Image 1 (cartoon, rainbow, N blue to C red):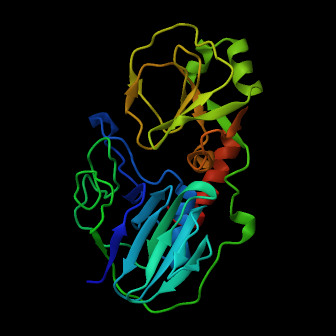
Image 2 (tube, one colour; image 1 turned 120 degrees about the vertical axis):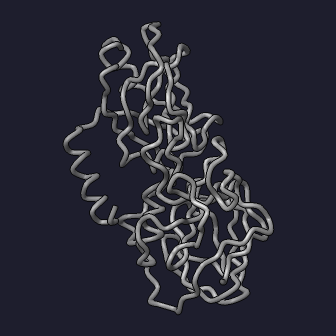
Image 3 (cartoon, one colour; image 1 turned 180 degrees about the horizontal axis):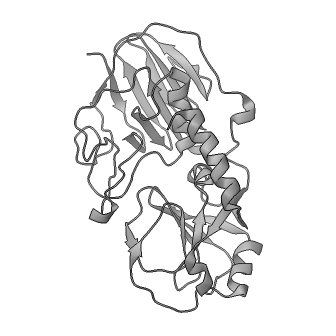
Length: 308
């Protein structure tokens, strides 16, 4: 079967499908794409089902060789992608012929891009129903051991004929370099925080630190008083805003630990997490209180459109 050969994997290239669900009680985190919006558009542009595996590239600097003709798509952060050194449009599908080279450079907008192929990459070694790569848990990927893509790896796909090229309208393509406003759904533990602590979160500007990865984003800014209370470790939802003793919030993402004991003021709305996952160190972030019903309605519209 034809394959995409990894000449140079880049800083961090991971195979991701929709992730693992139903196993957090066993200590297995979800994994999956941290920018679910870009991931979903990649598959949508090619007519794939929403769960088809893609490659998630962080910081670019990757080189791949195509062994047979096929339709591909890229979406997410702009990593200066080229096909045989000719620029590729981001948020678009494209046709690659046998022997052509796909390159990704350094990011100029966002951090992560997604690469999909018509029909999806063919992987048979799923773990707990998913091929998503979680390096920390040593699960998924080509080897099933959670390893990032390496030079010499080959990912199989079925060849496809050239089709009409599609591009996502500029109305729906985010500028990841803009300051972020994240909507918060407060949790039951929000009652443990004082009115002043909540006001601090909502009135302050925070900055993404260097400690930002698929597990979570540590932020720096005005300190939030967590009341000095210790709680029993419990399950952690996607997007949880933990407040450790130093008062600097942590927003947890797909590869988060499954339990934790820091107080949680709430969760960032799931529909806002893809933007956070593309934020670079130094980027500015603000929080606002979200409307649960309205956010659920928008999320359902999104899920129906992409066929979740």
